[in-house]
Image (tube, rainbow, N blue to C red; front, side):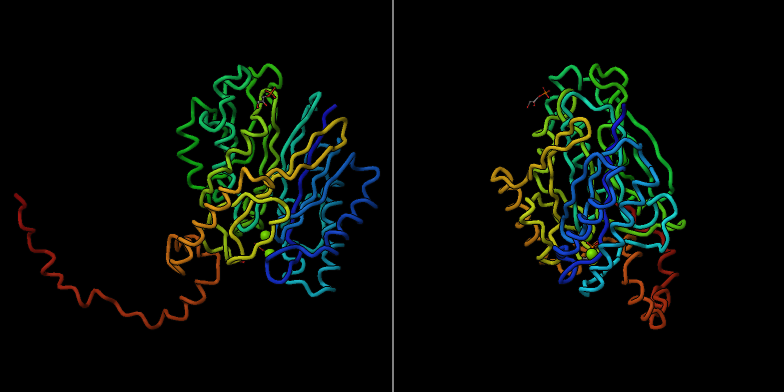
Length: 385
Ligand code: 13P
Ligand code: 13P
Ligand code: MG
Ligand code: MG
């Protein structure tokens, strides 16, 4: 029998700004899911990073299941009531629609789901990021499943030696493509380097994988970006599920992808680039300049639908230097204030409040063509020796 892991997340209000979730709201979510999941879920875990609440659910109803999505939606609605009562900032922020209509996709929350053949031991990691966008997972997921300098298993484990298949979404055009690593690695990189447009949605094993042929082994939330009501709606804090071990990246190979902070977009007002800092749950508060962007990793094993764990994986001195470097990068970038490339390029500011500011200046522009001597431009240019 197949097992499904569904991870659904939403920002339904935070305090004091976009810093962190409020304990009583998280408690309400836990209470709601506990009381309403008896016939639906085998197990679940509720957690958060920064201002995003996260529900990890285990069941056997497959992906895109109306009742599972409905449960998460109603739980977020119940949490929103508490958030509104407490006057939390942005209460109900990610619940974009009023009525649930069978699928939570396109309604605001982020969804990462996969249906799996449960192994004898089924270890996996749930990664949760705040103050960034789904494309922030491109770099670490590529490193885990395609970079032999990060993941030596790709070289020395015969089960990984054939590589993996990547499903990549063009979130601007609403199209997807599947490419194989290592043979099409350069094509993969040609796309996923443009992380605001091309995002890794899923990773699969190949048919030749001896232990786990043709299986979904990683999935990233991309839904809000994909197109809500036909429009690109900007950044959304992502999460991912990554299966590990036994012909897949080892736990440490997966975590290693976060050992050097890389730059991501979506910090402060969704408008700035900043370093991705790996932290334990105790540091999952977005403080300095509403960040810096952070990632938490929760490690689980799954057996016949029941979860063991989680282990708070980045709560470890071994990642202290990555955190220090991220803080150093923060200092460096912050001195640039509102200048690119700390601030996002103009093309990505289109979805922020900047166009309103610029539109106020429109009437004050005069053409500069008047000042250019067009005749002079027509004169032949002196030949260079
Ligand atoms: P398995 O391939 O047996 O899961 O373990 C490899 C490993 O964890 C080395 O660190
Ligand atoms: P969130 O996307 O985490 O709600 O943050 C928004 C923001 O503007 C932070 O500065
Ligand atoms: Mg928020
Ligand atoms: Mg957030």
